[in-house]
Amino acid sequence: KKEDNNMVSFESVLTSVWSSNTDGWKDLQNTMTLFADGSSTPPSAERKVLIPNYLDTWQRVIGLLFMVTAYFLACGSILGLLKFRNQGFVQRSQPAFMALLCVGSIMTSTTIFTLSWDEGAGWSDSQLDMACGMTPWFFFFG
Image 1: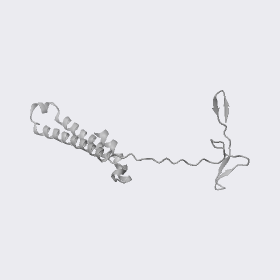
Image 2 (image 1 turned 60 degrees about the vertical axis):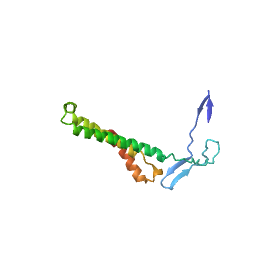
Image 3 (image 1 turned 45 degrees about the vertical axis):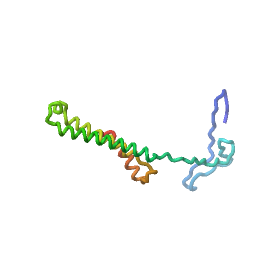
Image 4 (image 1 turned 30 degrees about the vertical axis):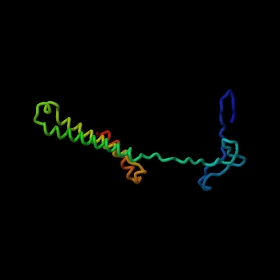
C-alpha cells in the first residue's frame, strides 16, 4: 500500500495460480497473501443476524380490507352499469370502457393480496415465489 499526495494505491502481487492439473489453487514460492490488517491470516467471516421484518396481522388485515373494498366498489360499478345500461347518460359514457376500467381496478387491487403474505404467515418459499411473480402481472395488466 503506497500513499502519495493523499492518494491511496495498491499493488497487486500474484500469489496463487489455478491449475486444473493439481486440483485447484497452487501457491507460488516466496509469496504471501496479505489482508487489510497486514497479516497473512484471513479474517473471520462476519455473521450478521438479520431480524425478520414480517407484516403484523393487523397490517395484513387492513390491506386485505382495502382490497375487498376496492372489489366491492368495482363490482358495484359494474352492476350499476348493467342496471342503467339503457339510460342515455350510461350509453353516452361508453359503458364497455367503464366496465374495462372496473375490471382493471379489480386486477390492480389483487396486487394487495399477493404482497400481503410473507414467511411469517406460514407460506412456503414456492408459494411466495409464485405470489411475487404474479404481482407485476396483476398490477400492469390492471
